[in-house]
Amino acid sequence: MAYEFLAEKLAGVVAITVTPFAEDGTVDETAYAKLVDRLVGGGIPVITPNGNTSEFYALSTSETERAVDVTIQAAGSRVAVLCGVGHDVTTATAAARYARRAGADGIMVHQPVHPYLSLDGWVDYHRAIADAVPELGVVLYIRNPRITGAQLAALGLACPNVVGVKYAVPDPVRFASVARDAGLERFTWVAGLAELSAPGYFAVGAAGFTSGLANVSPELSQRMHTSLSTGDYTGAMAVWELIRPFEELRAAAESSNNVSVVKEALAQLGLCRRDVRPPIRPLGTVERSQVGEILSSWGVRDEP
Image (cartoon, rainbow, N blue to C red; front, side, top):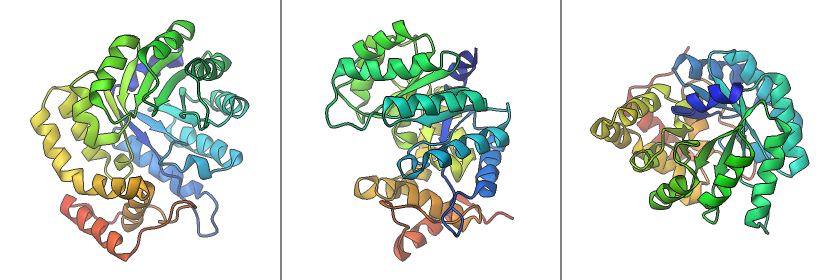
C-alpha cells in the first residue's frame, strides 16, 4: 500500500515546495521541476506540493493539479509525494482523487478554514476525504489547539490510511499529550513548525519535521534531522543556531514574509524568480540584503 511507504518516509524531512512564477505570472513549470529534482538529489524523502509554502490558497485548481503533475514527473518513484488538499469537502476530495490518478503517495489535508468548527465535524470532514482515497496515505495538518487525541484516535480507528499527523500548534507539551492520547505508535508524528521547533518536538515523540528551508539548503535540513533522529541534540542545535536568522526572518510580523524569504533566497541562488502573489508581497531592500548575508554565512553560492 502507498500509505505504508508514506508512513515510513514521514519520519524524515518533509519539504514543502515553493511554487515558482514566471514573468507573466503563470506557474513556471520548468523551474518547479528543477527545484523538485534538487530536493530529491539532496536526499529529502517527502516532497509536498500545494502546502502553505507553496501559496496553496493563491493557486487555482488547475494550477494545483499541474503542481502535482510536475512534482510526480520530476520526482518519479525516488521519494514520497504528499499533495496538499483543502477547502470544502467536495473540492478536497476531488483534489485527493486527482492526486491518486496522478500517482501520488498521499495527501496532506489543510486545516479547515471555517469560522465555525465543531470537533465531531472536524472528524467528519477528514473521514470523508480519507474514505474517498483509501489507497493513499493521509496526513492531518493540525493548527487548532482544540483538536485533541480523542479526535485523532477516532480517525485512526475509522481510517487505516490516516498514517501521519503534521502537528503545528506551538506547544510541545500539548503535542506530547495529544500524541499519547491519540496513540504515539499509531501515527507518524511530524513537527509541523519546521526546524526551529523540531528539537523540542523530537524530544517528546516527533519523528519528522516539515521544512521550507529545504528548498534553499536541503543539506542543512538533512543534517538537523540526522542529528535529531540519532539523539545528537548538540549537533542539531549547531544547525539550529546557523539557520535561526533565516527562520526568524520568515517568522517576523506573524510570518507575513514566510514564503517571500524562501523565494528571495532561491532568486539570489538563480533558481527561480522572487515573485509571490497577494496577499503576500516580495521583500524590501533591507530584507533582501539580510537574506544575502545569511546565504553568505552558509557558504551558499549562485548555481549555474
